Length: 557
Image 1 (spheres, rainbow, N blue to C red):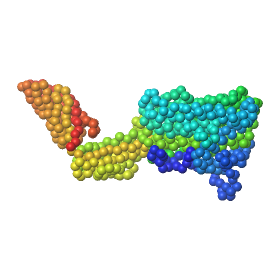
Image 2: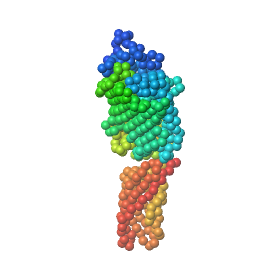
Image 3: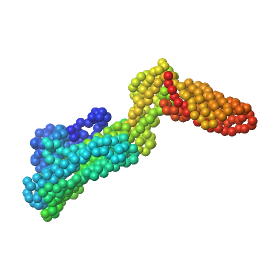
Image 4: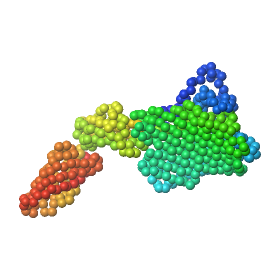
């Protein structure tokens, strides 16, 4: 369904939190007595005339209790019936406006007007459906599927016109334009397809612009629709989404123009769940020509986008029926679009798009001594600005042995955990970590083992190093060969990554000796780098300081 129940998982298996799928309007619930007297909301897939007459009076006052009933009834409909209701409302509003603006008279009567509108908007439907979703992208780095056709109406659905075409076009692309930018670099990527569609993707923003035009029997129709989504919450957990649909219909000097602007803002909590939502829906509709202009301008807002209704202005020959149709259509379109785009943004920040987690382990994670421990550091960072994101991290042993502590417990970020290795040689263990904060979710895992590990030394400049190190935390020696001399280096670790060393050598009639300190940088399984700085002398009275860089390549047995 376009609007359905919340929670659970989506088709991709990604966790889905609550959104505006089932709106919680602020008006008081309809009593059982009132419900028994309430009008039937939908008749044969259309908003009933009884509701249209009762929903808004000629002064623009909305029956909030009835509007709540309409919203709840719409949410309960299957998706195909929701589409039919939306398409029918859009057409009825266009026809009602055309009868007042003079457009109907310019076209040649109600039947001719409906046929012309259906024909012209059908051309736009064909343009929308013809957008080539399989066309290769330039450059090739953005993921295939960034472009996607907005869904054309099904054969069994009432023909889409006006605002319905834009609303369904935006709704159908919500998940695609947001989720397919997950793998992009922070630099923006933009594509103007040349067929009425512009896509822009970046980690911090995804957007789409659509613009199509059609003409039938001298009637010109056009729509522009756009969406801008910032799916990665800021440090305070705030995120925002903006959507706009603008449609025009005209012939000669008569016509009409409608605009819906949705501004969605919200916050996430420290668990990456939606804490609050506010949806502002600003709708304007104006007619011109024939000496019979009319206009309406109203704003709806609140957690569901339908909690409050404020008439900003109205004028001309606005009727209660027209106001009611416009209010109903805008309410339902707003609910549908907000639902789709909030879910898409939420899916993005839950997917790991916004936060990275690269855990480290010391010692290890490879070649741990059986029964020893290793400290895991989990420091989640924003992919947008690189800063710490706060929140918490949980850890769990998901494969192998032996254990991790604390387990399945939220630890404030940056978090530290202790892994206990199995007490036998050649065993493994995998610790999985999940970071949650106002800025999103990140997951990572780290693999440990107790396999016998050694490091082979190589490299150097004036002295070429060789040798095998069985344990970086225990004393070890390396051999060095220079031009006409050999040297033995003796290392005494103070930790697995630092210590002191001395050396002694001879050749070509001289002897040499010295001492210094060293550090080891890098992380398994990549090669490590040992950097040693020493002061030494030869027996002929020459002394100097030296620095050597040695590569340590890990091997296991």
